[in-house]
Length: 254
Image (cartoon, rainbow, N blue to C red; front, side, top):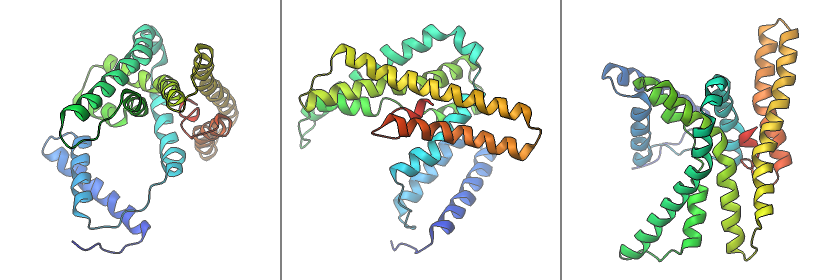
């Protein structure tokens, strides 16, 4: 099927129109909007009607991700999150580690049992498991809200998602160091985890306190919206510049 030539701006507008139409149809047939949107998106992708614009790493991590994470952190109930801190921490460290191990085991098993698949070793499988362990729950949380899931379940998933990046990055760095032959010491692992989690939380807290202090002194809706946007993207960019190698290293926790 031939590709219809369109400018990026036109494609974006059409995608918004399609998303709105999907929302109307999903509500009419009592179907979760998130699921319907994914199905329609997969269908449009397989038809190859449009030449999709190139989604770069910087576009995803520096344009889309800060707003999504800020929205999730802004609406989370931190008092309730603190009450469930033991459960959240169990999901963040042992839970992420178990997820990485299970993913790696499935990859190794599939590569050994399914014909014509190349054999994949444990080290590479663990690296892949660590790379995909820190998932974003935006779509899942949206689905929970539509279905009326228990508030505590939604809170646990949101809280875990805000902190799991540090664990996943430490595991990935550890496995990567094994691949290149540079073993990471326990002290190095602790420093890596502290830099990712502590650095991100510190930058986010300082930025949030400064912006909230300014907002309390200014009674102007436009300025308040602008400062809120600065807080969301500014903290992420500062953490990105200080974090080094990749946008999600520290910035995702800021």
